[in-house]
Image (cartoon, rainbow, N blue to C red; front, side, top):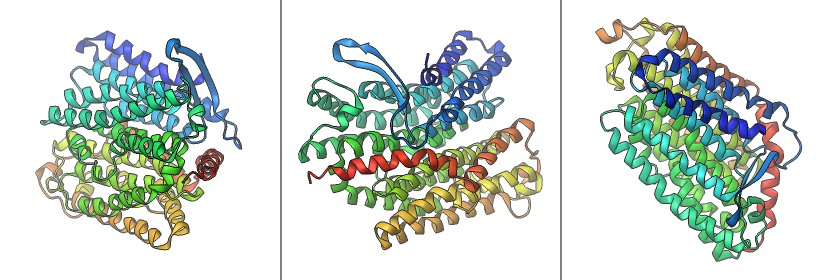
Length: 491
């Protein structure tokens, strides 16, 4: 079995084992199996980075085997500089959320932990798939465990949120399926992505394909105005569910743009770039203002995610090295920072059982160690230099200025809004005198929580101080993608 198959199927196998245990009197055993499974799953992804060859845009660690031979569907896997770090990020975040869920979940623990492990494997499958139908199967399969995580372990309106999540994301995917079938017929019966990249598609066909893919990927990102499902889902999802949703699942849509929309419909991507840039700027500016008026911490961070993912799509559609690389770096950085923000909210919620900002005040007086972590993550969310949150945003702003000065000004304004809503929340929750008896009774983080937050803090600081390992992996693949997009001159 190849390294990519191990990365995909190791967490899925552990997840199935957990589902088979099936009794709540084995909770301790279930938790340890889940943690071991998550750690092993992360460890098997590390050789991907260790053995990755820089300086080539070719797919690496390629595996190919026939799957549905009648329709020429293959189990075809590979990673390049665009997808490698997303695989490692997924496996890393899975370890963190298993640790975060150690005590928070007390019923159906085996199903909860199993769902996260299976979800992790399926998401890695999305990032590795080089066959269009295999990509679609993995892409859609991720909905099932997340739907169950929200619908079973969520808040009071969990059923509504789960249905909204499922229906929004499924509807757009049906148009993507039609696009995949069209490409299959045009390529003479192949689902191979590399074959699709070379198809001589006309302008109308590219435009239709571009919007078919947009319908699936824009909802997943989520781009304005199809972002409305995200705040509702985040508010109702359990803490670990919110962390995985923000850190990884939103990236599936952004990744789809780079793997499908740009290389398959390059002319349409350039023609409609103005639309994507406009929608991205609205997300960056307008949604940032919406975040300012939120009273629920989770909802505020959810809107923050929409604004930060606006940077990603903005970077992709300005078509220069800085923009696309910056968008990719922002995806990884947002994975670390958004997971940290949601898990920090979870630490407070586990103690006070409220996400309302008004329920807190003066937390620094009773939880000084935790507040130090929260401050770091808040600064990263603002885009403070030296943290992961700064690197991608700075690269995108530079790329935007290179494309158009006023576009850069619009993108840079997000740093002001980001600082405004993040610091406003931090001030109200953590600073000042102790606001009430609930805050007075708070106890600082325990060893498990300290370890979980330390892992994220190291990731946030390392990427912020030394982003070179991340950009080195991406550079050649990004350059090749932009060369491919620039070569097509049909429009």
